[in-house]
Length: 218
Length: 308
Image (cartoon, rainbow over all chains, first blue to last red; front, side, top):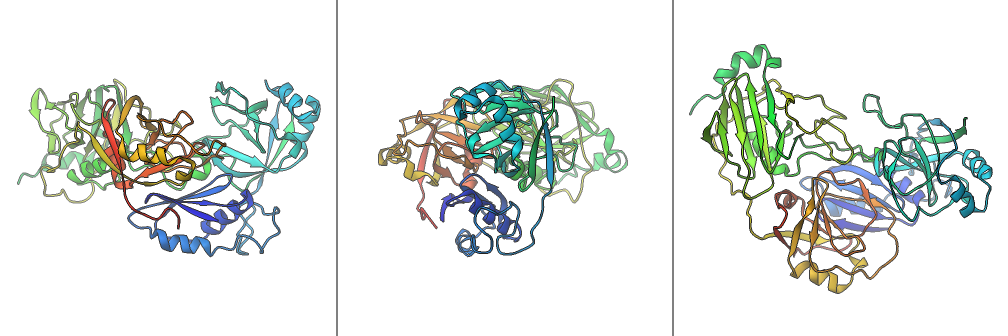
């Protein structure tokens, strides 16, 4: 673990793998730490965003270092949102996302993975994913836990307008674009579920810790 | 000492719904802003809120509001408003020429707008953003706990347009006994911003850090509430690999491969995929937000540990 400062506005905790990020996120979420405004998990890091007038950065760094990240749970089996220190195992629920698999990059993904388009669909619907973290746009969740054969690079060129509901792949992640936006992920399908609505509580369907299954519809 | 609230007392207590500001002209960009949204980064929602938070807080204090009330953030000027009901307002941030019904008034002072009067905010000569607070606060519906317009994610009220009507809330608390704020308006000259080394400083060459701390940078036209793109000497990297996206703070100097930094402001994305070479100290992000295209910035290093 390395704890890197972002001036007085935050501490960027760098970890070895996503599972540790999620464990630290879960553990810190359960504590009330003075001066901490927000926790922003990402693939390899957790940003602890701070109120500079209230946070004692050195004390916080010491506290973060004391959080046990392994041992309590088998590595790799940690559901997001689980207290790493043996706290409550909060089940954040599950969601089925109906998908029409007619994405513009479905053939490209098949070529990149050596699968047929049909096998890509079966692989995408065949395992349970979970939301590791949010980012990019309101309601966008980075989903992990899918079939490892689906690991593909981003497109060489980003699209200027990816339609809302597009289901994509990039790296080890899958995701659903909550609204029309630029984007470089490989698009394999689309869903009519509204991923983000501000008049709903919570507004995001995909929240860290949620388990997700994709289901093919025509 | 006058009692600026006296005239509004009946209206404010009895029928706050009648007190409002009508937008006649919005200028290039005027938005409603408060101190933004926190705790929602997990859903991809950034903090947003006023780009110059110190000036927003000051404007609210001048009219006796809580510092977190919503006000109008004016970019460069050009905002004309009509008061419905007697309103108490204060304008802070950049120094704008102000008139009320054609008569010159001053910024950074407490102004009473008679009902039906027109407040015109002209173009500022230095600085970038002004904050018009009204006693009672701008009372548009909150979205996820804030009235801020996040220009990146599209959350919050639409930017002001001709015909927009801004409801004014009920005044709480006592009126502060102050008429004017003795502040120095934003400078049009070179600004010096204190920075600390960023989380990814080791991705850059020694030359990059030397350039950053000893050469001037210019604010380009490609600047908005998300961030200010700067032009200056290149900041070459040592590390050429891909950085997995990571959380970003306001004040971060993010450097894309071309080597020209972007200084992140209020609407910056929650996460970013380019390394951060240095971070402007929190209290000075408000100063940075007043820099306009063409203005020069220098970064001065403050000593701090590079790792905890």
